[in-house]
Image (cartoon, rainbow, N blue to C red; front, side):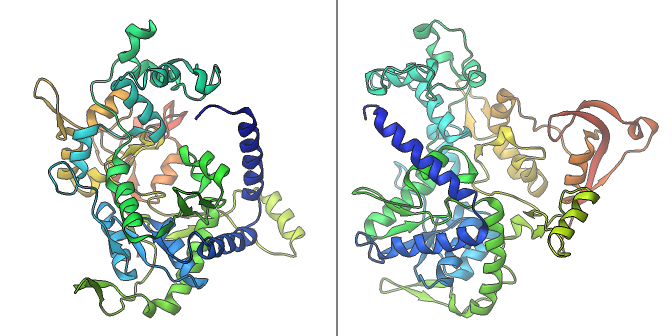
Length: 466
């Protein structure tokens, strides 16, 4: 599509309006989500032919929210990709399970097959797509590759320079090598393939096939506050996006993480009064689903997230006193968080891994299942020399640690006070014996990577929640 300056101005206005809604209070956002959900349901191009695309806590909350406001639609998920605790919630809520897209061999793709066939999903979807184009040059993507390397667009891009099409310089240094001869650069070439196609084959295609085969359209738990490629798309298209080729609703588009967790607590209470309305799918008979007896969940929050708790407000004693004075003696509320995972997804996904504090998602697999961790880190693919490698090679290349273990008493980790406090939520943290361990030194924190005053710590065991 040719770049259009008027369209760009129109999009910027939509983004400003969307951002203004994101700053509104929770009560407004909750009511707005309900209104937009019903507008989608009643739209003549949709006419009630909907389903909820369910995955982790965000979309579980969405499914229950829809039911709580009277929108009774089925829920669908590629549950087999999710954590076992999420699968248990899906089963009790009657979520229909789908299989990943079929491979050329005619069977559903496995996670390993997608990586072997297309590449590692690393950095972000947008960055991975650009790197994939650089690693797979064709005549058709020549203009795109030039834009990725330089930020310069051709005729269809309005002959602009300095655009967001350019891959960040940090990652060009690492992944721009395939274009060195063409662009006159001297960048490195990654010793592994990169791709953004994992989500497509494992999740997106099964859901799009379900949509096409059944003539139904999804509610999705997307939020612009999660950043990434979807932020601008949601801001431009809004909660409900209906065209000839696409019909979808994202009622939580203007939500923040705090809004979502607040609603999750409300849906927890609502669920316990309505749990008998949800029946697990027990099988099929003559092409129709057969349902079992209702299962009463202790909580709608999957165990991988831990619990939803509220931290104390980050306020000085003077600020606390001023708040109480201005609010009739009421106590201020701190932010909500989940005590374990903040986000979930496929355990082999590397999107955002370079931004995580340690222990990151792959470290946590190591604690739960060392053999599975070894497989993901060292035994996914074979290179041209026949040597096996996995995520370990990828993380080494992008500068993310993975070899050292937080549980090692012989190799305690230098942690700043803030990170040590955070880790104590999940682990029993102990200090090694000896004077050097007690003395604080300035250096780079093992967890957050910042320059701080550090002390040595190791994890003795994981915290078990009551």
